[in-house]
Length: 474
Image (cartoon, rainbow, N blue to C red; front, side, top):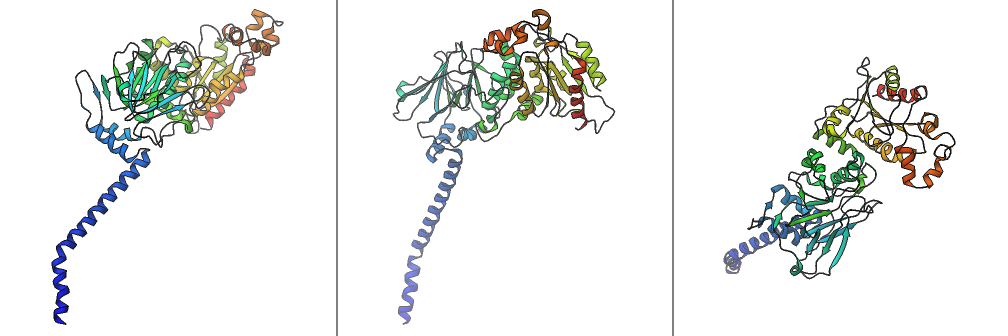
């Protein structure tokens, strides 16, 4: 019995190293499994497979500058590159996502080995293995039907042999967009380009390369502070660019959600942007001090400030001084300012931000409401001619989206200079609907280009009173 009892002990002792080895092996396997699960979870969150995640990490580590190439890289981007297209499930060959959401725009999100050829104005996705060739023609301006903008050819190549060689390599993503079009008008500069560009690039927190085409030199110069805040890198003008620039991700085109506004649910990435985010962004760029209007509750003796937009051509206030006196009588400190483009955006922004109410006839000058303190008031004077729908779409709804109080005053035929110049029997006076049916050009010619207004201050007084009452409740 004693021998039989000791035999197991001897056997246990002799097998102990093997058991310890097996336990170590099991622990090692469990540890590797745990690491695999963690990486898998991270990859699932970012929308990449485990293999793609590891491949991206290796690729980032191996980025080196070669002769004839430049390298733009950052540790921050090595992390964020893994989350460029949330939840899209890219394969090793990468992916092109063609977005036609909404009425105005179409864009392509190209993820993988992406090569931008400025000379050919093309964006190519290079596969790691054979793939069927596919091609899209994308107008990089936000209004896809507007003529005169060169389209970008986006191609998913069949194999690597068809790809142009890189001459400039980046580890940050890029956004490719066009200017031209209707830019040069202050409202279109923001509606068509700057707001859509904010939507496309803000998710990268500056770690993005902006690629511009169809641009006049004055445009990037006019909005340099905004462009520099969107990207830490100098804007690349693709027109005539001889490089083949290679990126891990390129957004081709910019998406206009609606007039001068943002639909938060359409914003790419995890950050749900809105127009208050954009106006806050502008206040930070131009160091605008006021984030709220005057509070008549806290400062009952203080007079709110009203800024009247002075226009020198069509849609002028013919009785500007009379309107200013009416505003003073309503309790405001009132002034008229000519918000000319030649004074610069920053000067305009500072002037508007120092006021609580912005008053103007329908036109691009009302775009300056972007710089009003949130909670301020926009008063839009709508010229005669049934323009209320256009006025609300272009300024009324955006003002509400920005957190402003929107008030509207529609001019009667008696307050329009068209009554004097055309007479009461002219179709533009008697039948505005017929003028609208005759086409956009006729409508703009009569109601926007040939009309100014002489506001009936007695009729206008209740609108001023509503503006004052709003500020009294702040």
